[in-house]
Image 1 (cartoon, helix red, strand yellow):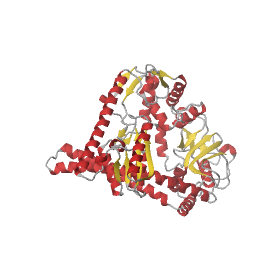
Image 2 (cartoon, helix red, strand yellow; image 1 turned 30 degrees about the horizontal axis):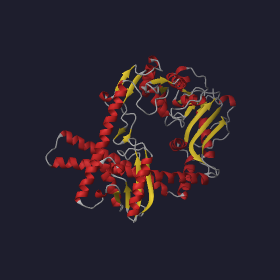
Image 3 (cartoon, rainbow, N blue to C red; image 1 turned 90 degrees about the vertical axis):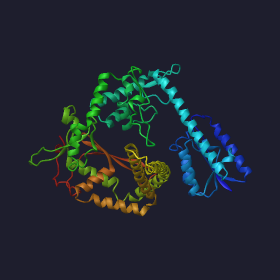
Image 4 (cartoon, rainbow, N blue to C red; image 1 turned 180 degrees about the vertical axis):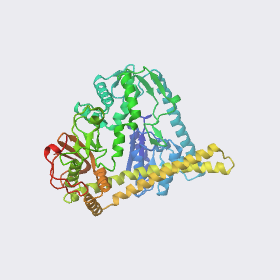
Amino acid sequence: MKAVAYARYSSDNQSPESIDEQLYDIRDWAVKNDCEILKIYTDEAETGTSDENRDDFLNMVADSSEMEYDYVLVHKTNRFARNKWDAAIYKKMLRENGKKVIYVTQPMLNEETPEAMMLETFFEGMDQYYSLDLAREVMKGHKKNARACKHNGGLPALGFDVDKETQTYLINEREAQGVKIIFEMYDAGFSYDAIIRELNIKGFKTKTGRPFSKNSISDILRNEKYVGVYTYNRRQHKVKGKRNNRKEKPADQIVRIPGGMPQIIEQELWDRVQARIAGRKHNPGERARNKAITQYLLTGKIECGQCGFAMVGKNGGTWGDKKRYDYYICNNRERTHQCKAKMIRRDIIERQILEELEIKILNPEVFPSLAKEIQKGMQNLGGESKKELIYLKAEIAKVQVKINNMLELIEDGAGSKELAGRLAQRESEKAILSNRIQEIERKTKASTITYEMILAYLQKEYEALKTDDTLTVKGLIDRYVEKVIIYGDEFEVIFKLLHTHGGGGAYPVVCRNIIKAAKELPIPFVSALVTYPPDQLSY
């Protein structure tokens, strides 16, 4: 006989040695039963109530469709799962792949009898009860700490430290400087990208020591702790089984104590920032960018290197020949006149960006090395998708069980408006999960795309670059250009793609060039222009 083994220790059992103890019993059972263990899967410091973060568990389930063995050896029921629905669903999936779960320290559960099945259900129910009861008791302790404005575990927010004796919050002066920069720059109208660049220049990092991202900046700007309000249990960390740190819980479940934290940001600054966040949908600059979608190829991609604001399209302006030209202008200059950056001719900068795109990315000479990198990425993508697909199929099975139960109630005459509403909600959840599964299955198929197919695709993109269709070329820019930054008479373009050009390892494609005139424009859809004197390129 052949088998694989699975062991884990969780947050309520923090001894890594417990895995060794589980594996000792598992190996002992294997020796006594003449069973060969082919592979061992382990998850460390992961709760059994959720399969979502148990990577090796999901790998074990995924591998069961390909590996040849008879049993999955587990120490006892609570090491497999502490949720009876998950236990039933995953055992069913393993059984469909010809594998049986063996609990090595609970031999009475391994028999194929009605009594054994009843006992197993009892144990799984008790495991789930224990887990839920433990969570309830932990929450009681956390809420008690919260009412005293004490730290409840995990990393404190950027700008704060925790007093080891009192478990209350203290200001970390160095980090607090970074927090103030974020609020003050956002209040002054700077973009997230500009704020991130400033933080990087000054050497600031997130609490985990990583570079800042737009999401981390957004979270900081919305965190009431910086204005002195202690909050706990605010975020709905999971919605329909998935993480969602932006959805709040009902107000009666949130602990919120004004004055419970040392204050880093003044109330007036906080109020201005929150008003700007709430009103950004009505930002004139946003409206200008939206109006320019079809006319300006670099809409949403181009920004001012002098102040960090987005640049927007602007009509008008004539030179000596009385011909009218279009420009990109810094939105900060346009709205507040606080930036002195020059406007840049639309046709000139767009032409040069497209030239760089053709040289660095859509260049037949680099297609072979580029295709190899893309194929490698697709193969990795398929491997990650497989694990997510297992999880999603388990979730849809859970929803289907609930739907079936509701249908039985309705058939028995227990129908009501509330029940019908809940049924509609479950059907909606099932439809969302089904769509996600279809999307993942398409992603998984990406790993079957050949090197030749990728080369053919790149060739078509190259041909599209030569068309005179504005929307087609706009699509190319959206797909390949991350950002364009204008520094006076120079520009920097950052492409999304990574490739090697035949070298050793991938790198981001970044180009820095002088904005210059040209006698001929290789892209037909750009207006035909004569040679431009240097002083007519921008103003």
